[in-house]
Length: 193
Image (spheres, one colour):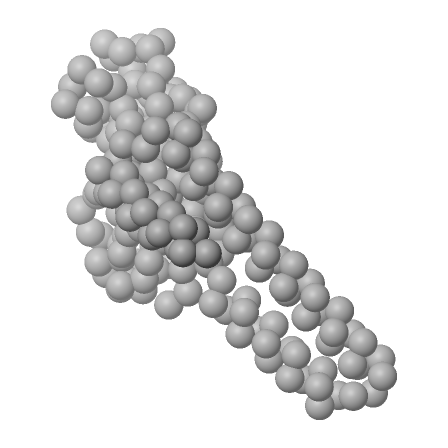
């Protein structure tokens, strides 16, 4: 048991370090993804078990217990992050419709297989959400902003904090986006307030 605790502490520290520094080896990312999926499965199983209990108590006429279980379901669902997948086109900003409060936590996970490309000198050359390497890694980099705040680069799975109230917008960093092509899917996870 002690070895498992040491491993978990090491893994959590490694995960935080790698995400903060943006470099996440693919094998480590796979383990992170597996962990997230397992946690989501456990939460879903927990809610499903509570729903079954609620139905059983309701059917048996034990409404007091059914109401208690219903409160547990609401409490669990309200504390669970919500995830949404959207598609961001390279030629225009994407207003997500997700309204954030100042200080609210969220993370963005672009699909690493999707590609987009800039017009002009790079017409026909595609890149991922990190943008082109040869221009200081900013041109065509996926960016986000909340409300009217200045844009920030998207960091894969990195926990962000909204600096102000407002709608989350995601876009490709390009002063003239009209000639850009392609799109990238992004999974957005928003933690409850």
